[in-house]
Amino acid sequence: MENKIIYIPMKLIAVLLGLSYCLSAQNPHLKEVVKFPLGASVNPRMLNENEAYRKIAKEEWTSLTAENHMKMMLIHPAADRFDFSKGDEIVAFAEKNGKRMHGHTLVWHNQVPPWMKDFQGDQKAWEAMLKNHIQTVVSHYKGKIVGWDVVNESFLDDGSMRPSLWADHIPDYIAKSFQWAHEADPNAILFYNDYGQDGKPKKMQAILDLVADLKRRGIPIHGLGLQMHINFVSKRNELQEVLDKSVATGLKIHLSELDIAVNQKNNPNFVYEEKVASEQAELYKFVFQSYIKIPTTQQYGITFWNISDKDSWLRGYFKRPKEYPLLFDENYSKKPAYTELTNSLNKLN
Ligand code: XIL
Image (cartoon, protein in one colour):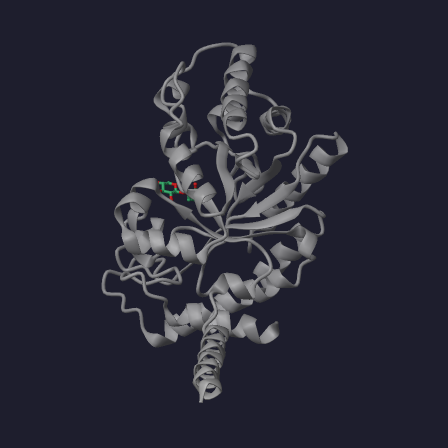
């Protein structure tokens, strides 16, 4: 009798365990079916205020990027003042929840504080100013941030250097920025990050030339960030070509700001129909399946830009209320694309 009492619950436990294993195997998280870090850009206010957002940040990602709070404008608001408070909040969240932290971005033409725009001085003074910015930020996060987007978006579509404060005042600013970042944290993985290389062979070539030049001169560059702000009709052959050429540099590859727009023309009457959603899901599959084929040593990871459609920068920055670029919907629920993508990768495992 005693034996029987023990025997039944054990059997029940075994069945329940088996069932929960089957269920979790059937509905895995996306992070469980990929072997590289998977992340999103986050905003500290949302992490604090929005529980659904915070839950996804905790449960879905293994890597985080600050959407805005490590950019010059927010982290260095006055010549003699750095404000690390919000960046630190994100890093603390990442540390507490065991996430890798990626740094974005040290040098960019955009989101520059007014005092930098008004800065007066000769080349030496400009160099000292930028070096101080880079080295103060990198030193502050030394050992906490694994990799940095050192320079962001330096080239125009035609492959020429984008005019900017930095290009205008500091000859060779890209190489110098990498050098300064490396001095401040020799262990940090240093990236050049840019967007829209697909279908823009001159822009792609300018980036490849930059990499070759930096390598030839012994300047430390370790990775290429492909932002991947693409849209549902982006051409696969062009995306593949960008990935192939980037991989051929031997550097680590970060798909650093992935989203797939569906309403790029901002049609106010746009309806997110199943057909578009499924083409978008197919493209997500293509992107991930291409990425998993690159050498694992070059897989730095894939980062989505924002978490849900609701907080996508495409809605905010470009004022496109009817845009649905991500894997989570307005209610922070998984979209069919999430499940289809995860299942398709799970099958390959
Ligand atoms: C965007 C942010 O998402 C917006 O909130 C901000 O207003 C502008 O910048 N490429 C980049 C990112 O490298 O830093 C940009 O982020 C999106 C395009």
